Image (tube, rainbow, N blue to C red; front, side, top):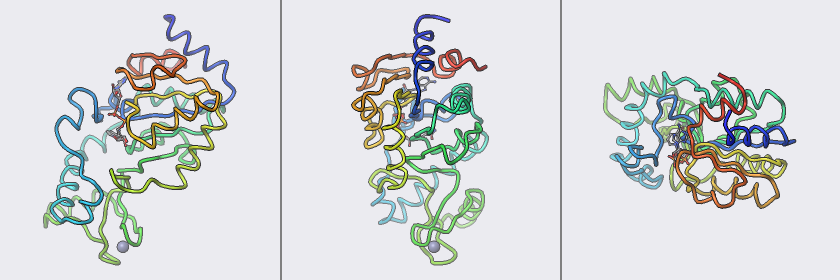
Length: 249
Ligand code: NAD
Ligand code: ZN
């Protein structure tokens, strides 16, 4: 174990309450591309804002076309060593909540109880009607889209159907925001893992942890704006580093 990993392990051992905050970087080792790495999704396509989705059938079709294109990757992705390390930390009982920006469901798939995963940006593994909240499965929507090329509508109320995610320009889920704040305020250590920490309000949580007196660790391959605030910064691969610090394979 090298010095940086040993320092991370010591901070974790010294903490009473740990809050984990994750971004797309923790899932790249599962084969899901992030947004802002070189070659990430934003280097290839622009985001579609929520008002565009509401206003334009073309925007909805394009949103769904992109989602179905990702389906083979999302459906087969499995938790990697980084997810397993986070799950092992949760199992020690000192982590109340994993606050995630991710929409892939891999924290739950790694064995963390769903009630302990706070999804700030929702979940893309299923869809809901924007009007009546009826749930739809991606496989069914994909089959219908392949047949008629139209963006899905609700079978009950004809409302617009969208993945259960929070798009740019869409309101944040109020309950998740409150729970995340509570978890942060109770923690004396915050681990920010695999996030460029530029998407707000999500990136406000590691900041809040630090302002509240907690220690802050940033584990991310590239520099982030919050690096100067952190007690420990590791510009390294997540799976290897966290796996070694927590002691999981
Ligand atoms: P981001 O793309 O802005 O940043 C990811 C960061 O992770 C980058 O700085 C990159 O250097 C780092 N990284 C990537 N792989 C790494 C690895 N193996 N080891 C160490 N560092 C690694 O992601 P973000 O901050 O989460 O913000 C993007 C938004 O996109 C989020 O709001 C999220 O909702 C969404 N998103 C989610 C997924 C997912 O669910 N897996 C994937 C793409 C985007
Ligand atoms: Zn409906």
